Image (cartoon, rainbow, N blue to C red; front, side):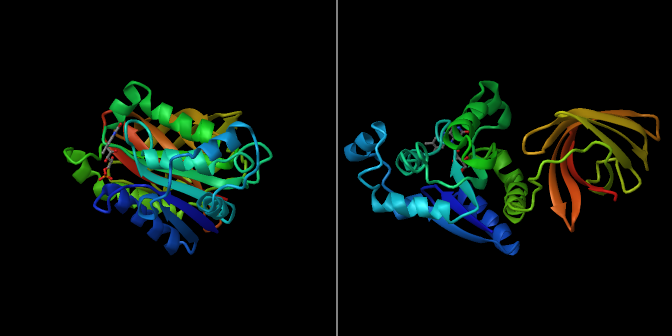
Amino acid sequence: MKAFIVYCHPSDDSFTRNVRDAFVKGLSDAGHKFEISDLYKMDFKTDMSEKEYVRDANYRTSPEPESDVLAEQLKINSADAIVFIYPVFWTEAPAKLVGWFDRVWSYGFAYGQKTMKTLDRALFLATAGNPRERLEQFGLLESMKRVMIGDRFHNRAKRCDFVVFDGMSREKESRKTDWQKNLDAAYAMGRDLFAEATEPFSLDGRTFVAVENSDSGEVSAQTVFCYHQKGNTIWAEYSGGSIVKGFLVGTIDSAHHLHFTYQHINNEGVLKSGECRSVPKTENGKLRFHESWKWTGGEEGTSIIEEIN
Ligand SMILES: Cc1cc2nc3c(=O)[nH]c(=O)nc-3n(C[C@H](O)[C@H](O)[C@H](O)COP(=O)(O)O)c2cc1C
């Protein structure tokens, strides 16, 4: 499989550049091909000319787009997935990437009788200086997602994901503490770009066991999860190992990601609860969910559950 990476950062001395390298390493280790447009290094022209404006604004397919635009369009149509890696600048992508969309998303390619293929995936990896709470406080994160996915991608990819690596500005302690964790996540996203389950499926009646967990987690290989699903509502009972009885309830989204809250009683009689996001992947022919969870008390961890056939 092949990914087209649109990378946009003015400096090699950046966290974003490290995200790109980690992502590319994951992609290569998984045996996938890739092509990169490094927009600053290419000095990609991002101001629309009057000729381009007149053509697009009047829904015309002639004259043919400029050769640099055609080259980008060819890269898109030769790939299975597109990945954007960039820093958040004033709650947007850098102007260079916004301008890339202005010109590359031309009439007759991205809209109208479009010749752009429907990609399997579009993935956005955005680095941000502000912490997530600040980005969520005024709906800024949601706005960025909506513009990229709701407008620029819409039905141009079968599956779209927007990931933000938050709190990464230079003066923040989290830049140091989260650096490696974020790069590990970027590597895993590259490695698993084409591995995640994309076919529709139901969780109803399916059973899973935990195969990996962080030290602060409580589920283990003895914990069995019996899942149910109706529409996009999912729930499960779980027990075994140190869990006497547990329940979870949540939703499954169009990318088959689970978002749920859980609560259980452990064998010390303590009631525990938390929330979890869970991403499906098919590994070694088995359906697995990669879970990122957080206890109500604040401690976080990751685990993997695997289907028992
Ligand atoms: C011009 C400019 C505008 C920025 N605007 C925002 C912003 O609106 N929101 C935010 O969270 N971070 C913002 N940042 C911080 C960048 O997103 C930060 O550079 C990036 O997260 C990671 O650092 P890196 O440049 O080392 O890759 C801005 C940075 C610059 C230089």
